[in-house]
Image (cartoon, rainbow over all chains, first blue to last red):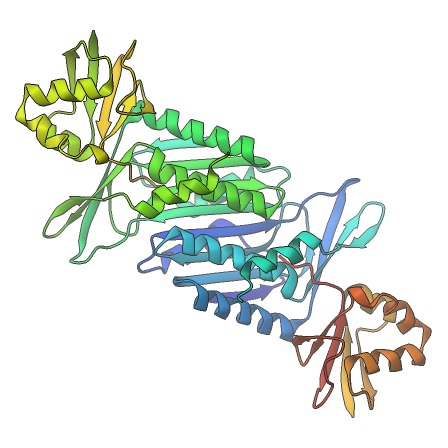
Length: 149
Length: 149
Length: 83
Length: 83
């Protein structure tokens, strides 16, 4: 289980190959990559701030929860902080399971929680102005899918 | 839109990087890779048979349908046929969109249709015996999720 | 009417052929299956459980009661197991 | 009681600090917010809309009415935007 919060850029293909390379029995491998998008007026860069000790705790908790809920052989989370340019990878999640439904659901679960429950904040620095990304109601709502009654 | 049915092995990382490399605006990239699994008693290889002209028609149709249903910047389908060893990639799907929900749903849709509506048949050749993979009721059922009323 | 008939997977193995040309008057896929089963024991074996027989007409999925009108290529196979 | 108080994102920018040590008698997070708002105008600005203020106690998400008992580190920040 690779969980990394890093300043450095990374290559999605290399990470996918490494993740796949150490699997022993899985038939299904899902990956999600989040990419820095442009903004109207042009993006200079984004800055990602995080809360180091809590970030690790929160991501570990989310990953443990995913392992309890689905039959996974392995999972991976990489999330960057600091300064990122358009087109660069913000983060990547990968899940491996015997069956595709487990791999897909676990990846979506991880993404939904990373979006709204891991302490990261994005600031978009455009040519004219800089502004903090505002959280979306739809992202908060996405979490309700995973609530256990 | 890359759609390939091929005999040759391929590298998932290389394909992911190539797919990502030509994207212009997407914020979300999902990939699914199907991997040859072992069987009880040990797998020698699998043989995938397909129906060439229909395979292309069926995959093109599934991909067009996905593009109509979700806001995708691009998608990719690679599916192998012929002889494959344990751990090799059977197929790979990738989807790119502005929003993660579109990318995830389109990838799951493509997978559900490729499983049961594209003319491929897998045979598992073990050390003791060879047998055709039997389709699962759960895979047929998965399609009902995408039925439009 | 001359049609190409293709067989895949275990249907191919049971019939013992991957492809043949048939002259048929069948109006539906069902008619064609019946014609074949009369022709030889191997078809009876291949088509013994029609629930697990899928059919494509000119490379498009069809039903066993689909019409054979203007069809050039018929393919018989078990449920697909791609992905 | 001595606590470390951390601020992130625009809460940090409005407060003008990323971290400070505070001696407080606050029983709940709400009490602490009130104490801060009395101390200086910048906190009033940062905490003007409590609906968009999230809090973590010793690196675990908490509520504004959570108890401060035995807490060593409090963090204030807007809704998270990771992923």
